[in-house]
Amino acid sequence: MRLEDEIQQYTFRNVHQKLLINLFYTYNVLSSSTQEILKAENLTMQQFNILRILRGQHPRPSTNTMVKERMLDKNSDVTRLIDRMVRDGFVSRRNCTSDRRRVDITITQKGLDALNAIDRRSQEMDAIAAGLSEDEAQICSDMLDKLRSGTK
Image 1 (cartoon, rainbow, N blue to C red):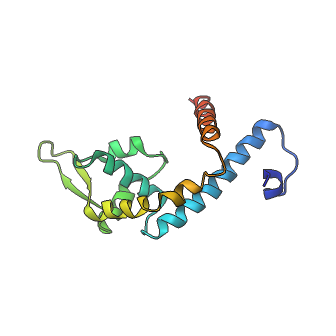
Image 2: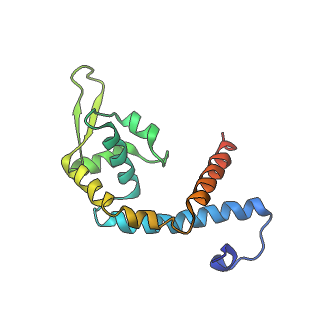
Image 3: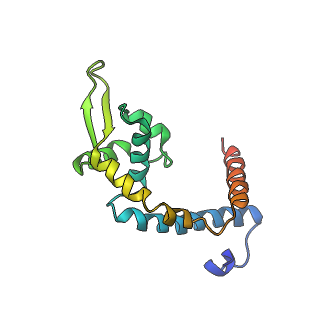
């Protein structure tokens, strides 16, 4: 369905405003669909992102700084998120033996199990973007890269 019909707004200041509103609206729709899948593992989008980062480093430990640099949501309070994930058993944290100022963060087996459960639902995750062919998805991804380059 067209954006205009979805939000019941038929005029925009210009095509750039319409694009931005469409991106924000689409993000919220896609985010809601993804959150439904993550809810089964008691994870938020930010926690899922942290677990994916840590799994990519596994078995090597990571730091809060490294996780924050790789986060999709750069405004996330990584320390608070990791505190909660330690409490829930998805990650572990301990002082680095070679540098006492550093705190090492690693994914636990429970965190790996949660990601594996989500991986088993990969078809559902992929279906969120199934409205596009592979070529269209690549073009869309390239265009989003180009759009982001204008913000730096």
